[in-house]
Image 1: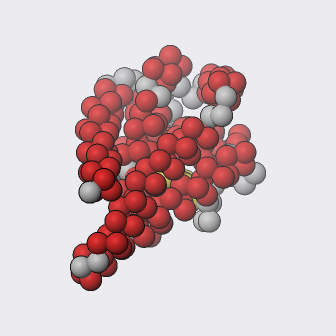
Image 2: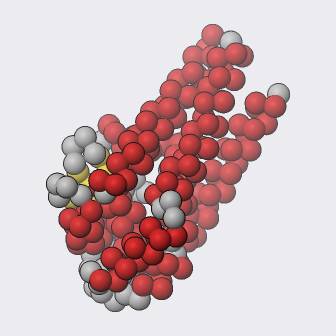
Image 3: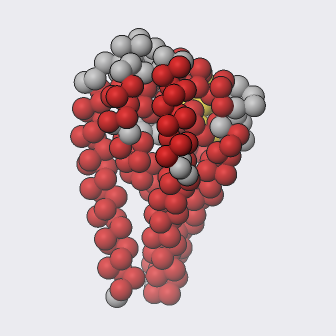
Length: 208
């Protein structure tokens, strides 16, 4: 019973996070990035500064599925981020480009592993339901809850110290990626929300 309650709480939290994400995203789309750089240009400039090998950047259909595929060294951006010149496009492009950083390799690999754990939890719940085996269902639920916790840990690992975050701000300012920089700082919540909200279906990225 406790497992079911915790599982339901996590599901409700993710639904609420998705609603909040849409609200924050709408606000960010109303803020113009006066640097006049598109999301694609921002991702290209930032990834060239962070990675050993500059990734390919392509436009891919789908909303909130912007991601970096480390195996193929490809950044995939949705049309609204790829072509966008607003604060939403800038924030999401920076978020994805950060995963190309050689110093943040473990975060990228961790997200990939976590995505497949989510898929594994679904499979366990479905198999358990078909077999009418409560133990397998509960194990699937526990695994899903663990992936939610892991995502928080990975998010915190992006910036281990305040100095890391300040270094990012300085790099953004130096390369003139976002103007005014204060708008990016104020809407950094979008990064956290996008990662948590897409957890249930992020594994789709590795089959696209």
